[in-house]
Image (cartoon, rainbow, N blue to C red; front, side, top):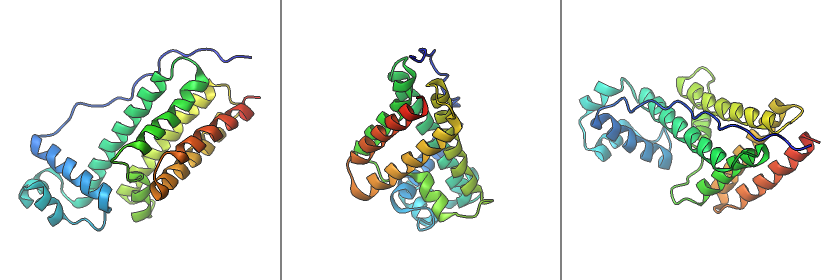
Length: 204
């Protein structure tokens, strides 16, 4: 039996930029450095030198380096979820195609010049303590992606959408790590094919 077509999915709520130009500049600079080099290795002095601002300016906006990292990750979370939403909507009304749109987004991301792996996987690795604010922020992002996958797998008629969504989340994270290690889009292509097979089994 064919799955029904779907109405457009609501876009994630993305607030207007709540920042001064200096705050936005600091966040953009910090994001570039953190994403390229890691969170712990990049110090405040490096961020200030790259941004060309005084230390007091940074602390006027962010009480600590941890607060800056959390703000950068929260912004990245919104960007990724908006990108996933757009990819799902671009895939059309078919529930199966909408789910696979997530993997089309991965393919485009892996092919981009600025792909350097997952900022959230890195954050979870560098801050492994579950109660750490940075760990919690990164984990919330992972939960949000899994929640989206649960919604999409349920719409596609999976018998156990939550279980399938968890499996697809693992598939996505594995493909991100593989793409970061090897380069290219072969991991996203393989992940998409695996997702299609898993979906077929889950809806049989």
